[in-house]
Image 1 (spheres, rainbow, N blue to C red):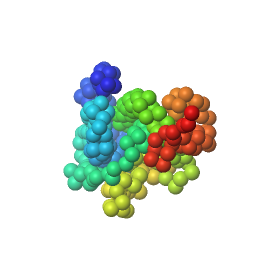
Image 2: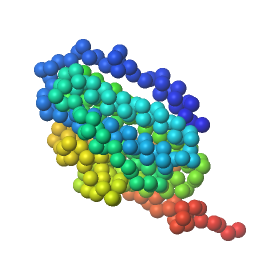
Image 3: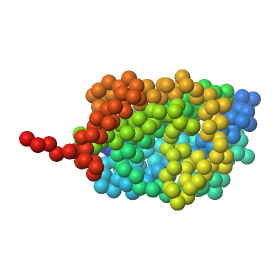
Image 4: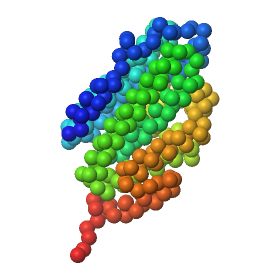
Amino acid sequence: MLYPELFKQLESVRWDMDKDIPWDKFDASKLSDEQAQTIKMNAITEWSALPATEMFLRDNRDDSDFSAFMSIWFFEEQKHSLVLIEYLKRFRPDLVPTEEELHEVRFEFEPAPALETLMLHFCGEIRLNHWYRRASEWHTEPVIKHIYQTLSQDEARHGGAYLRYMKRAIAKFGNEAKAAFAKVGVLMASARRTAQALHPTNLHVNKTLFPRDTIQSRLPNPEWLEHWLDTQIKFDAVWETKVVERILHNMSLLMNRSFKSVQELNRYRKEVTATLTPGGTPTPTTA
């Protein structure tokens, strides 16, 4: 089992909201209303770890190891929302999300293939790590800069934990896992070719609720995410390239094969997919 080891690793670096956040360094003159509004939106977005955890537990009933790990991931992700809310309570109480606004992003996700969902969230952690690093640079107020840097480090560690479960899946399922990971890897590394950044917060997950079937669509301001990325933190082609490079680097480590571009990963996806039957199992070979 990976859970006991991951628990020890993440417990050893866990930060304390009272002791490790420099609340006394707050400088009101360096927090604009525009910046404060984005903190509220991120606090609500992070609250969506709740329905994501419900999805993971439902779709991984046969995997107690990974389900147990969700206790760590859920705790730390909800803590992200909590620390952003605490910041607003202390310094901009008028912007604290209401319970109704938080609850709005809790809705049921449709069942999806567990391996593809694992890869999707692994890529999401990589992307969020970079978004929060950029957010920390954009903000001017010292305390929130520190908070976003802290959150970005958590997301990187979560990505590393997901990677461990992906390695385990490849050892167990072979090409079925490789094909699933490559499929989602190609999608998530191709964000510059799409109209919007690809992340679990803006993917459609319940067709019966369309068009309000994404986390983003259920925010008080559904247009916020693109504005935050494009205009405020300026998550440009340089930063997007960093995300793609990290995805390709980790895919190279996972598959024991070098991928220098999305095109190379896509060719590999076709290669491993061709070894599977329509049901997703390895094609039988004859002697």
